[in-house]
Length: 257
Image (cartoon, rainbow, N blue to C red; front, side, top):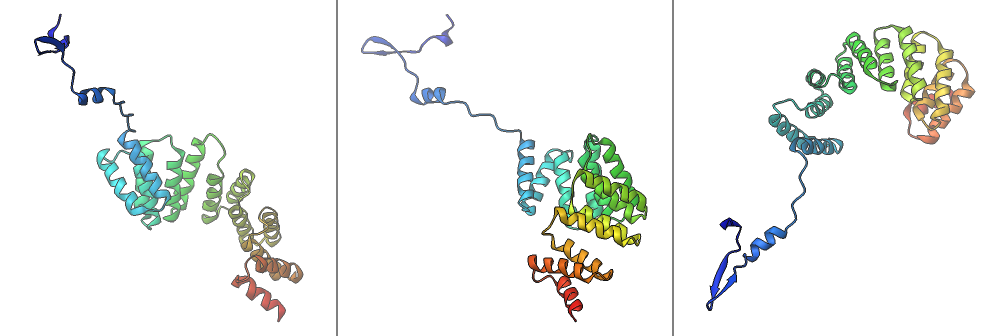
């Protein structure tokens, strides 16, 4: 028999008795094993997300630095969140470069391309933003309201009104969003098509009846068109929801003089 496997013995009053292991050893054997922790990178990514959502950016940036040091700058999520923070701080070019890096690390991500496009738009590089949004659209496996809305806005800035109108109308088919209604109405006004702009605001109000900005703008358009009764109704609705709305107060006051 292997000596190491035998039970140790001790002699007490001439009698041989098995030697008991110390109580600490028994406790150690009976203690359940600790559950394995999440990997460090995944755990820190989760913390980065939590602090970013809470807008605790100083803590978030500290965690990002640790993450990038540990991963030698190759952690996609840490670079992504850092790009979002830099953009909020007004460092648009730096944010664009980080989203470019994210796109290199994960070329299949539609979100990375969308963020590149957003930064390009904020840099005033609208044609490149159009190209990026088209690339994101081609990679997306379903229609994305955000992509088509922003494509419409980009086309508006490069004065391709036909493409802008197509994208904004398609975006509204995906999601009846008040921003898209407003942008489409703005496009009609740039084309001097006031009736279409009015109809667009009326359609928007059907979905957002308590939106004071929509009521105010529609009221002003009615006033410019000489339809004072309709103008007063919508301006009055604005003041019902937002009594301190300066635009509505001034417009209503001018009609009452």
